[in-house]
Length: 451
Ligand SMILES: [Zn+2]
Ligand SMILES: [Zn+2]
Image 1: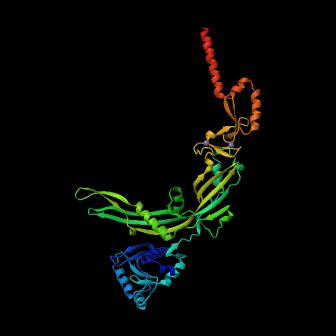
Image 2 (image 1 turned 30 degrees about the vertical axis):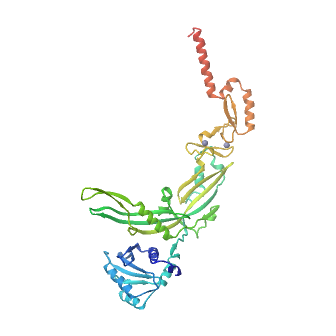
Image 3 (image 1 turned 180 degrees about the vertical axis):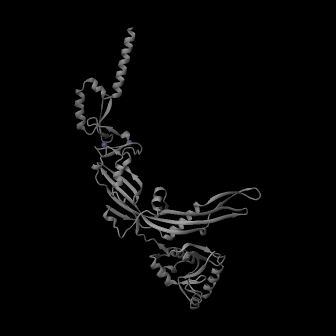
């Protein structure tokens, strides 16, 4: 395990913490033993329903001799734990004969015993749990993705559903969109924080919380996922599929998979840091002298234990729907029947970007329009947008036509209209004329003494 040789003792302990977690031990955490005696890994195993503590001493040295095993044996005996306990020494190197003999006499897996793991054991464990160890860190090898398609609806059902909310757009006449999927790396770090903050007046604050921190884990800095995206990933019952067994290339026009930008170890550390920041609070309390104090309570690194690290790809489905001269994006994160929309051009006016109100499709050019940018074609009585319409003013009012030909046809018709019909081309004007005429009649009649 050449890479382990490059690690510092601390890094080796952190790595072993992750290894034990992968092996299924519970409440795995690194903890300081006492002033000068370095750190131990503390964890638990459940044997026949009985919880047993395991205290692990990590030795990043070529050889480990008997005194190390002896010392751990007594540390286990004095370790404050309400239940059975045993010890374990893990080393990147090997154990001396007397060290092995001493451990054998204690019994490796007995209560109070000490088990030994040497470099070759660690190598085997690494292979067994499918961990790729490089630079002393655990690389994420993820082969699972949340299900990118709805279990019962077709691949493009979400796009068609979005088009149904657009007026004047006939779903049966929509072409198939081009739909691709990007598999985005996600990591969920589950932690438990147990911390008590004390001052002279006693306990002023305590924390006992579990957290699932969901991270976007692509290149660059990790980002905490919030809202609907977080819900998709944090939902443990969301259906997953094996990437090797189910090639997505058959179902999508293109598939891309982003790499995990960092190692599992780095995400873990980053997440714990986030948790520490989030759980930092300022507590106000009154001292014995009746003076008000405030204290900032930040949980220690060792107060936060990582319960589980889960990695999975989150499918980002991207559809491009071509309508006339326009292409519309409809994008969402998918997890089986659930999804979180990230882009929807179908509910946005192509002219002004308005997303509120009703949207109407212009069949003449393929645009989707807000209420301000959709008009009525004068000749055909169909919706037409202000972007592609040919316009001309009739009866002082702008009229919209799909092309010059329609305009010309209407022009001829207008010319042949009797005056009252022409006036009707501008309702406001026509109404105004009627009122004005009545008013004039009223003036004339009253001045003539009729009224
Ligand atoms: Zn608009
Ligand atoms: Zn148009």
